Image (cartoon, rainbow, N blue to C red; front, top):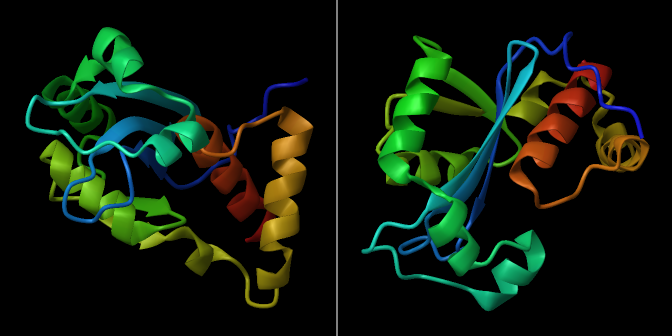
Length: 162
C-alpha cells in the first residue's frame, strides 16, 4: 500500500462521522480534513448533553462511544484547533454539505460555508464519480466511513475529475 499524494489538492475537504443520522440529536464523533496538502483527524469526545447513539451507525463507522470517551478530544478543543488550522478560510468542500454544516454548527463553528464538492467536477465527468471513488479506496486501502479516509478519497476523486 502506498500513501496517496495529496500535495496537488487545491481545495479543503471535510468529512465527519456522527452518532447517528438523527437531524435533531446527532453530533460529530470524528472529523477528517484535507487542507494545503496535509491531513488532519480528530476523535471527538461527546459532551455530557450529547446522548444520541445509534448502534447501526457504530457498526458502520466502527467507533464506540466508550472509545470516544477515552480517546476523544473535547469538542471545544477540536473546534479551536480547526479554527487555528483553517485561519480565515471560510469555504470547505464535502460530498454532503447539509450534514457537514449541521455538525460544524454542533461544534460551535457556524461561520464556515460548506459547498458540494461534486460541483467542482468538469461537466460530463459525473458518471465517473463512483468508479473513481472505489478505485481510489482500493488503490490506497482507504476505509469507507472513516472521516479522514473519506476526505482523502473525495479530494483525490475531485482532483482527478476536475
